[in-house]
Amino acid sequence: MPHRLPVPPSAGRPSGMRPDRHEPPLPRLEPTAAHRHSTNTWRRRTLLRLAGASAIGIPAIATLAACAEDDTVHAPDPLAAQEVLARADAAAATAAIALAPQSNAALNTIATERTAHADALRTEIDRVIGVYGDGTTPVRRTGALTVPGPDGSPVPAAEVETVSAQPTTVAQLRDQLVRSQQSAAELARTESGYRAGLLASISAACATQAGVLLT
Image: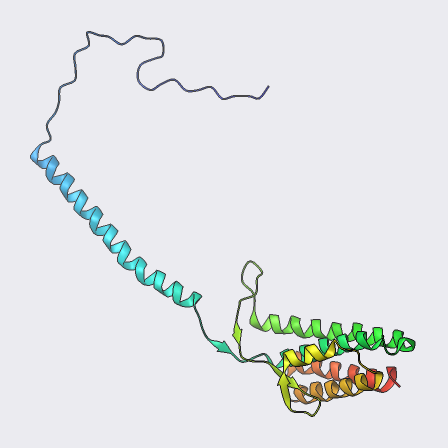
């Protein structure tokens, strides 16, 4: 059986005792002038404190609302375009298997490696943005993202992602990897430290994929 705590007896008279009917009523005390003055003073001070708290709270709420409605548009991270290219190459390598099943092993390797490149780039992008105490990533508005197109001119990232899902020949994939290799190498020259090393490694991997795996 569950243990129940005893219910405390009612305050004042012990339970079981009948009230004394002959007990005289308590006299009614009228508040003195000093008591009325003290009560009115306490009420005025309470109202003033509440008014002061409200006056302070309004600017604080307005500041928080302004922070929550930050409309700043940030420039895309330089690595964001490389991430799009890496995922587009991985999708194109997977799509090329349908036209070149004999190159299945090489194409799967390229798709796996380029996906790993994209994940490494995304990890670095998120590291720079930072995270909140609960592990979530801040939401930042960024401008339109473009990537190098087949002729070298910038094109919207969404366009590259759409085209990469279509069946691709091995020759087309090779050219795409060469462009990705050149783009990563050029960006590596403008970066430093870990970012430069990451881009240089990606560029070298793309060169090997295009020049060795797809020959």
